[in-house]
Length: 308
Image 1 (cartoon, rainbow, N blue to C red):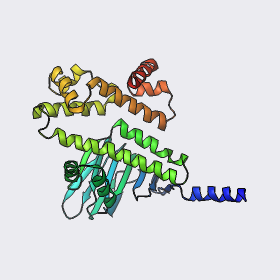
Image 2: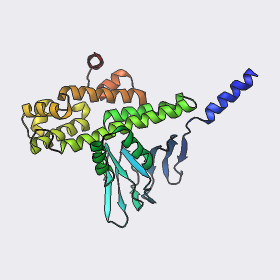
Image 3: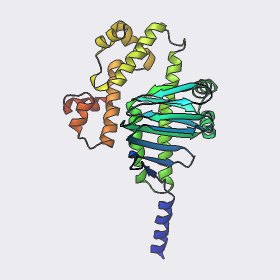
Image 4: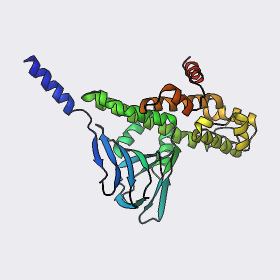
């Protein structure tokens, strides 16, 4: 009786666990696969890895029932939206968030390009519930304005990469625990993403007593750091590249982002390192070099200092 009970329980746990559905790209068209998981709340997390032998034209309707977050980790792509002569594009290292518009989209995947996208679709009704449950009226207004009336772009941060690297660990849990873990990672990713969107809105406002030109320079400095993390310039060189004095850069960066340039670089490098250690077979020394440390000991010291 006990064995039968445990066998049934284990079977039920397995059948109630999140399931990954995978579709291979037809061998005569190219290589790669598309996989997706659906959470209990109806959010869809998908992974697209594709390389086509010839240009591939595709079309489809962007559902109005979802908020979409698209992350581009390799070759970029552009698409056209029917009826309103609008086009959009996303390049390596970029992400975008937008509400589906219910119109046909036309897209061409260029031949012999390595495409790697991650996509998170959140039901609009669920998204509204999250906004109403967790945010104040002023925050909700900012998000609705930024997310429901166009396409908002932000750079993919090391923290976002880290979340994606951890997200696949849902397979270690069975039954409802798997769904709970998966949902928590979608929540975490959405939180990080919305903080970037809100930050950009605040920076564009008059709340911070920094001139518009200096603010633009400081935001550009952050973009430079994010785009070349391993070789991020020092403060003096960074200030020169964005045409601002070193003192204005350091003071303004701390004012806008709540941390110093140096501390920001270290934090982002450690987040990038964590995602590489989770996703790849690289050892600590190799990861240290990739994120900007010539010696593993320097990387270890940075990690230790960050946790104290």
